[in-house]
Image (cartoon, rainbow, N blue to C red):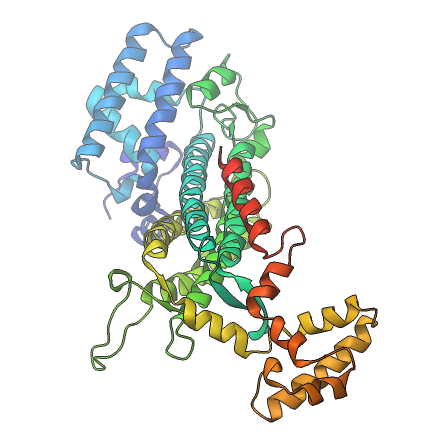
Amino acid sequence: MTNTQDKKLWGGRFAEATDGLVELFNASVGFDQRLAEQDIRGSLAHVAMLGQVGILDGAEVAQITDGLNAVLADIRAGTFEWRLDREDVHMNVEAALRDRIGPVAGKLHTARSRNDQVAVDFRLFTKEAALDLADKTRALRVVMLDEAEKHLGTEVILPGYTHLQVAQPILLAHWFMAYVAMLERDEGRFRDAAERMNESPLGNSALAGTPWPIDRHATAAALGFARPTANSLDGVGSRDFALEFLSACAILSAHLSRLSEELILYSTFEFGFITLPDSHTTGSSIMPQKKNPDVSELARGKAGRVFGNLMGLLTVVKGTPLAYNKDLQEDKEGVFDSYDTLSIVLRLYAEMMPKTVWHADVTRAAAARGYSTATDVADFLARQGVPFREAHEVVGGLVGVASRSGRQLWELTDDELRAAHPLLNAEVAQALTVQESVRNRASYGGTAPQRVQEAIEAARASLS
């Protein structure tokens, strides 16, 4: 093999060329070139600071700055040549800068290491990704809030479930507001994570800081960070900012997967609660009647990938001593993948939910059929002074009578109801409709229309 070490920016110590397979295994440029904008922003801030503190003169700063901007222009134009032998985004940019402006490019790396360089690039990307997903989560939150408000006026009733068995009737608006609450927490996690990662590692150098008289506060401010990291070992060796981002992604994915599961069920022939829009469903290559909820199924499936990305990085980090280790090269692809996945899922749901049609007659009938007002009958007896456990047993017996004869509670006769308890009769049973059940659940956070209206108003206020 031809010796190519003279082309390596770190090659001075080595007498033998890098093995070709090692070079392929070691390179990260195939994926970390995505950090090119952040890398050049970091370099521009660094070289400006080197000029401000007198490490470089004005001419050198101008030459390097112009060269970096020219390299950035090539990258944006798609004409930049990414080379595997230059390993990563940092070495590709620096080598291209050297090709363009000559040896003065080497002064850019004064008081800096690839360790703090990659840390600042990746932190910049992850902070921006967290804030972008926070915005996209908020956009879906607004959509779900709008849907809740739209359906509150018509008081669409949905069966509420536990164990996927009909439990109690709820307003469809209440169901939407449950997801509004989840998404509000999801958005908050991304914003909290962005605030905690709002520190610049630039200037930590390899691991111990630098003897050069740099101004880390200046570079932090130039890059939009609130402050520099306080410890150089931690600054270059920690990836908990990426773990926190991936954790927020995983929790959001779990919520979106739960939403997906419900929509998949509700769109089946057996449920028939909703009709999903043609624009967000697909057909079958062999069965012409099929309308498949592919968006929801993929969102449910991709949650597994997002969970895996978190577990993958946790596994990488748990065994790495301070400070930087090459293992940490494995930090980026999972973050990129989770960000890309959630970006599109959030957008798809924000488009799909307003176009989904709910069949109120079907949902109300389903809520009524499942003995969902049984608890209301027990509550009626309890309000008359019957101990709730006794009332629960009485009504459980009535449900058994009704189910064995294929009837609902309000279809039982006076004699059957009075036989179960003297306070019960047909008039009482028929008055405890699903509509009445919903209206009665007026505790704070409950499904009664006035409480859901209050929740909607509070959610609107929190958005501002």
